[in-house]
Length: 362
Image (cartoon, one colour):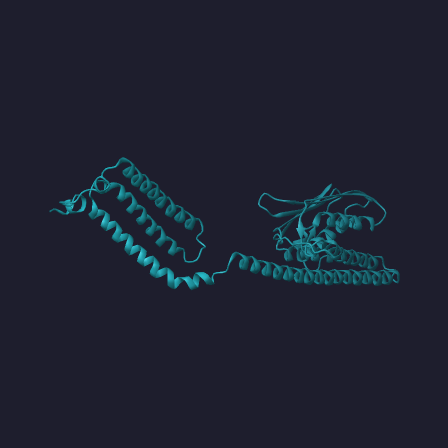
């Protein structure tokens, strides 16, 4: 007997339907039941496999694949029972049952030792309790951090306030000192010093009013700074125009830029308009390369001199300060001056954007 005959049609054996006397009702009952059971046994493991694939976080998911193989084998035995109603393929059916037996023994042998570990897995209620505990702990930590940030903000505001007050005290001392002087040049020098002190104080005032105490918008700062210089100068008919892009800057960038604008506007106000009439334009924009472009221009008499950045140390103090501030900002300056136009153009790298901060309610 060939192995094919042994598997599919062993000699002397009859199909299972013969045992049922080929009674239509019994054959239909057995065949229909096995079809339904077999299809269900094929569908269930596929659903289990799909679920495990969708939930790779489940522990011991490999055990589920043993159940998948075992149930598939069981389903195949029921489908073979349909075939053996008409074909005595008991060899194939026996081999499938043998595979099913091996899988069932392996599944049972692995499952029993694994039960304590599976039982130790937290239940849904336990997981929910842990989540609630950790949520409460996280809320407590967040509240502590908010309180710490609020204390820090309060301290920073107090520091900025005290620095501003100290600078105002210095300004008052300078005013008192200037009243004791009769030399116009000395009084003018002290007036220039007052403007520089005002620029420093204005930076701290802006920071004190900002939401994150780290940055503030440079546009209103430049407008207030330039207006203060014009309003504090000699009675004249000098018109001021300030145009600046919105830009959040920090202390390290705002101070040198503010002092730079202070020096340039002061120079124009002092030297460009002997008749007391003219226009000063302050413009801060961004170039196509991402740099910041600061332009301070006036329509005054102009001058024949080298740009401030190239003057010797014996030159005016304002020019020396301008050169130093441009260097501090790691920028470049270009000055054009002729009758009717003096234009100072400074290019500097834009300050890096500060990370967004969550405002803390006081």
